[in-house]
Image (cartoon, rainbow, N blue to C red; front, side, top):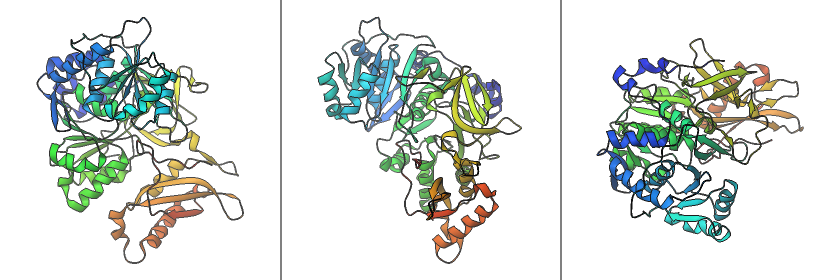
Length: 502
């Protein structure tokens, strides 16, 4: 059991900047500081319009007046909007009213929207006007539900409410890569710990230029991309469509990007083809997580003068558990644990408790989720001698062979992913022609590196190199069948690979 200190990150930032990174109890406290310190700075750029911190504060206060409702019961306000200024305004209005914001993904259909309103006890639904059709069923079946279009404002601003750290702030949906999504309840203290954790481990922290590409309905997008940007007095350009990502980069010239590996891979591929300007001339950092980050990405971005920092987190931990400021030295690690959390490793599994952890799942059984006050992450891990964390797999994905050996797919995949021409891979249990269980491997090639394989059929050369790696593995980890894919794997909205089910 160990509780890390924030001091481990001090050496990566100058003393004056590091001391400005202070912990706060609530989103309201964060926002009060923002409008005091950065009133005339640009907070959000969206759809061709720039909004200062002062203007965003005024708009959130006007919407807050429409959301205000006299009730003794805890408030749950649904936020149903795509990435937009209206989403940011609605979330801030709800959070600074002391309510719990239930973040609904914009792709939900009307049945799912109604189901969420019922399951999560939503009393008010703030929706983007273009999503009004998806709210009609909820409006018809819940006459008590207050519906407010996100572009509306009240006549007079309502003051902020300052909740306590333990008061609920948000309900976020988990990724659901191997099962259904669950709603995790995050307190104000947990959200703010995640926000502050996003400031550790790199030199320039305040007044950066962020591009928002990740969905705000995902914890990585909401906490690390949006709220850490606001906390640091940075400007955030909202990219409404990933197809416009590089056009927006050219126009906005961000200094920092928050990406999942699949997007980082795409940006790298185009940069290699068309030049460094695809990333914008001002880009310094990429924060990368939500899925395994290949060391290849760290190494190749360094050639462009961009520092890519892998990290690890969960929806249940308000996103951020660890970050790797030493990525140039150990790119395969997800770094040091952030402060105000305790951990222990039980039979290889990481258990966590601390300020950043959720208060529980809403409407879901929690049997087996906690033990001795620790949240059982389901992630298999190891630490090196310096205390840096490495993810070696997921318990739910472990394959038990007929001889009793346990195989972690992620651990095996890491060996194949180390090849520069392999972008992604998936190890899974399959059957041979006789019906016996075998280990199978599917890979997605990295097209930019195929020329390094030499002459001959690229697919045959890939198979040859994969077999060389395969022969170096322990017998129980060797795969019996290898397939080189012509297309990418199916992915979740947060771009994680959807695992094959037995």
